[in-house]
Length: 170
Image 1 (cartoon, rainbow, N blue to C red):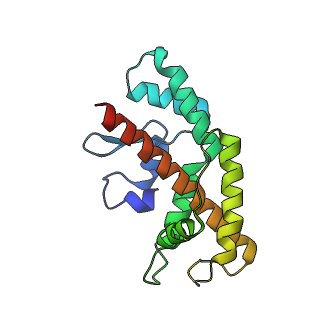
Image 2 (image 1 turned 30 degrees about the vertical axis):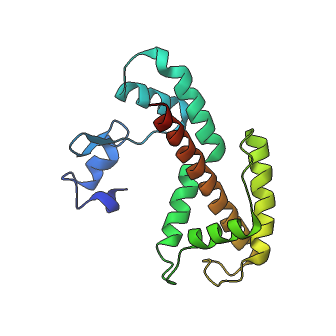
Image 3 (image 1 turned 90 degrees about the vertical axis):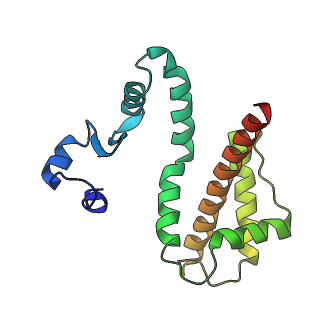
């Protein structure tokens, strides 16, 4: 993290390493804090929000979902690989085309069904993916990458739908 931020912050690396668990101001009203585990994450969120323990249950539920999806790690991994893809088109665009062609839809009824639908969609999508745009040459790695893209798309779609619902009710 330090190497990515060193031009934006004014503290030396050793101080950054010592203080990152407590939080480091990286910009006006932005504090970067590194936490380990869900309990630490809950405490950090409560500390930065209302300071009232009554918000713990919704936060625990949200963190539980994040823990299951591990979407932050997937997003980071995919984004770092996609930035090196200079083929002129994005794999997300290709995925969208293939999903439309195959008329694929996520099953959001519960988490198990979502995973099953993504596994099925991975198989169908992989079988028609002919472009040489994936950053892997080993078939199993290509399949896992497409699956990660599908998980990210599911996250994006679910968030977008929930924001759309909120906007319609306002």
